[in-house]
Length: 530
Ligand code: PEP
Ligand code: MG
Image 1 (cartoon, helix red, strand yellow):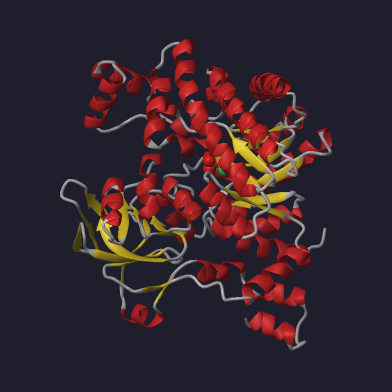
Image 2 (cartoon, rainbow, N blue to C red; image 1 turned 45 degrees about the horizontal axis):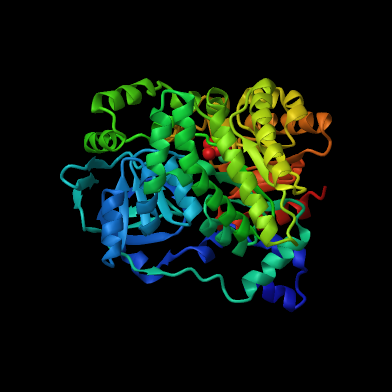
């Protein structure tokens, strides 16, 4: 309001107004905050990482199922977990806030909560959780299921009491005018990371010009789908795997149609299956027994499958495009779903120009990209031909392995676009686990070895050098290549400025960070015009 008023009074111009607002301040307009008076009287009892902004107040629950149950009967809950996994998504969705003992700024809880716009404090190692007795202890006190706690996801503070919250208020009119000026001056496009039509609509409402990353695996966890997914994983031959994939296909296609509809013809980048397969398998004994029965195999056989999928370093294991290299039928199914969805939506909306974009994750060698791309193009070309429709599509890759950045000139011979996956690129460049680094990084800040979390703010010296180099190499091979970023840094103001400076075309971030990225991109362009 002050910035807009100053422009109306002729004291400053629009560019100055855009530059005077700290992008991170927008968080306070887009998320609930604590009632200021009540907060003054409250005393924090612990601190974790400020993983997803906003204020939350609710009763403690320890499982995603309890979160859903309590929510259904009208309770406000805060979900407390050692860490979250994709199985917890529905419980996370209904929680006011999420508190985890383990996990850094790009851990599952942090990334998913940010995507949902839900408050999250992650990596509070001082907490001792006792799931069995449904309690946790922190700073010498026990908190039981049903006790009130409050979280500040913007500072990482944890309060052992209820502090009333005030809903988000983007301030009628002023916000829109300031953001309008930001859009006028920025040169970077701003996309959103979105896995569901709900996220996509939220991102679009906040001004996203496309989807830069749809993580397709998040669509596999609903009850009916996870069964088919598990059948696919347990299958020990291609035919059975294909049968299971055929069951998943219509769901995927429906999901993609939903995303395309929500984005009204704007670009949508769909990334193929990325996580290690064991993430989809049950962990609890009772679930294993139930699933074995459902799948008509013995508990022992299911245990064997689970054991065979065990990996010492799953993040460096059988994941990303390696899955499609081993099982090309997965890429075939996902391509079929993407292209059919695009054709259906194109028929419904002849005025939209549908150009599906398929993104292959975790590529480190041009030949593996070419292998998967060949599967994609063979499948897509046939469907398009059979449909008798004229549709273009693009196949690109994530650059998230240092080797891909180093050989980006070769990778660009096959990739029509690059999206920098700086979560994994940071993990693999530093050799820091993105899930565990929070545990020791505080020593590094204390000792002034590192100033900030490289998973939150892009390390421009090291990881940034790889990004810059890969962008240049990619453009040398293919001048028309689109370059973007979809790691969590895409919503961080200093990282956005870096992306502007190295000449990327777009940044993609979680919906609630889209306005921050728009403002940061405008400030970068005003300060450093291209
Ligand atoms: C990344 O690695 O930066 C990325 C966007 O992919 P994910 O976080 O899903 O690994
Ligand atoms: Mg990644």
